[in-house]
Amino acid sequence: MDNFFKDTPDFKFHLENPIVEKIIKLKERNFVESESYDYAPINHEDAIDSYEKVLNIVGDICAKTISANAESVDIEGPKIENNEVIYAKGTSDNYNALHKAGLIGMSLPRKYGGLNFPLLPYVIAGEMIARADAGFANIWGLQDCAETIHEFGSEEQKDKYLPRFNRDGITAAMVLTEPDAGSDLQAVKLTATFDEKENVWKLNGVKRFITNGDADIALVLARSEENTADARGLSMYIYDRKYRAVEVRHLEKKLGIKGSPTCELVFKDAPAELVGNERFGLIKYVMALMNSARLGVGAQSVGIADAAYREALKYAEERAQFGKEIINFPAVYEMLTNMKIRLDALRSLLYETTGFVDISKVYEEVKRERSLAKEERMEMKKYLRLAGVFTPLIKLVASEASNTIAYDSLQIHGGTGFMKDFPIERIYRDARITSIYEGTTQLQAVAAIKGVTIGIFLDQIKQYDCEVLEENDILKNKLQAMTVLYEKIYKKVESIDNTDYLDFHSRRLVEMAGNIIMGYLLIINSQRDERFRRSAKLFINLVSSENQEKYDYINNFDLEDLELYKLKEPKIS
Image (cartoon, rainbow, N blue to C red; front, top):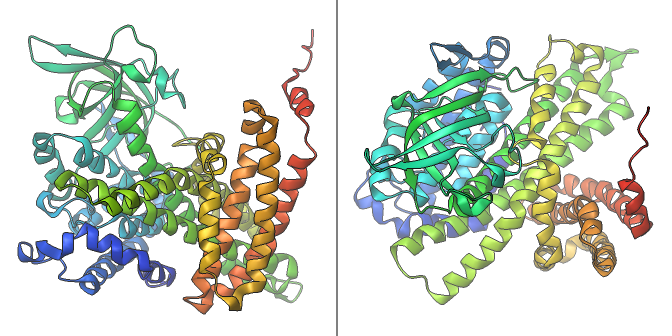
């Protein structure tokens, strides 16, 4: 197919979600900018038309440039020359194509050269780019840093840095992790010291596993408060590469996403600008950035899953064994169908979550311009709560599913899939990182369990239940039965009143909720488009058995069993 947007009708379907009208109305402030910018929409239909035209361009670039370069980028990879990261040629070509099309910083306000798009079309673009090349999706997705500067930076910083994204096509990096502070960002040691004489902050220390680390603009988490060891001593800073005060000490040699440079950086009196207020670096600014990153990895995971499914389908339709194409064997078409229905479910959850984040973010923007009415404040609070638990949920389920789908796709390819002759070998390697970076699956379960413990998931499930029409009562009844099991088993876990016991089962509980939610979303989607009816029926049948298995495991698991898991094997002398 010559266009990744046109060959995926789901994208237009999700752009037509009723919630999008509310998002656009808020984002465009009732379309007042149409008087100042000739490319600003004049109404809802005009906005949707703009999104589709831009996404059509992205889809074209994905098919003809990014996808075409993926294999060579995987082989060539980046390198260091004169303390500078040099992208593979294909990576540079990809980025230049998107920059030339005016698509860097597409969600920024028009006053800074952006398109003022909400998250929805941006996330759709990210999914397509990940399908084309998951490694390049990381470089593209780091323009989230521009959103962070827009949200928390000073007016001077916004004017200084934000126009450069669209105008100059600059790149960005999120510089958080350190050798001794992986997932535990509270342990960050890189220091930020204010130089009174030069009237500037200076950064000193080492960062590791930094995606696109030698970017033009970096958001750096650093310890600004002496004699502190927790999150309250951390602040966020902007570092501009023009100062050349950072040594790119090492490029990691990785299993996958090889086109995306992963760097070890040494900061040596690197001048930097404080973002927002001191001591809010982790507890406010990085948390906001991480929510965007979780959504980004969710989109990346769905894109990888889509690529893996398409490769499996194509191979199964062409490969003949025992006198017929292998797609005609039950063992193969079961795998393919399960890939497709899970992909439909994941995509539904991805864009449902995007809608929650979109509304909460746009209300934050409006709040900076005027006081919100009581109803608006209540609605913002509601969507912030939903976004807070749905973002780790989509990151968890989509990343794990992308690995499973890539695994099954390679299995369908058989021995040839293990060779570098087919794209699935690269896709399989690329998928593995999605459940590790931006917070492992285990950490996402800890973040999302709040949706279980304070009833956010259950309340939303009940809301979805009210939206199901009578014609879907059979499927609805199955989901209601799954919900009863979910409530029952959580109450058992809660009654134990043991934090370790809850943490031990958190992933199972979160996945049970996620399966029910995705089932409802597929039914609701099928009420707007018949295409989803098969996926709804088969997905609910599939996850009903999965949830029963999780229920049985937890139900038969006693607190004493937890102690058995804690026992260490005796040392071998």
